[in-house]
Image: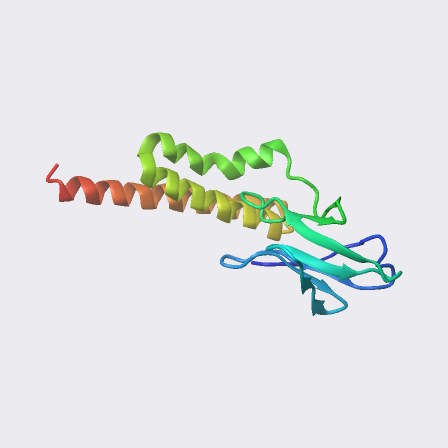
Length: 158
């Protein structure tokens, strides 16, 4: 569910700078003029050459649970997307309630559902679809937790 987001970076006027958001098993990637950015001196950093010839360092800041990070270029943070509203975070995080009901298994399932819900909220342009799909993910998470709880109870002979 990764997306390509165009970014305006001062010093790169007239050039194409894009960020590819992370997928399920990948990290964010930075592209300049259609090519992957050059890896920087430290892990997670990129070296970019501005129009005036100066070299600057870029990196990503943020991540879980919001799948869209901020791009930091030469110390200046560039927001790639509007922050989610507080009520969206509450909806996205509802599956975490399983932590209190189901311990470690519930917490793991709730955390996974929260990550999927955050991806859905960032990738789905239709607001009604965002809530419907993430509600279905949360309901499926509860169903899986119930199935595991029943299986454990039956296995224990209870």
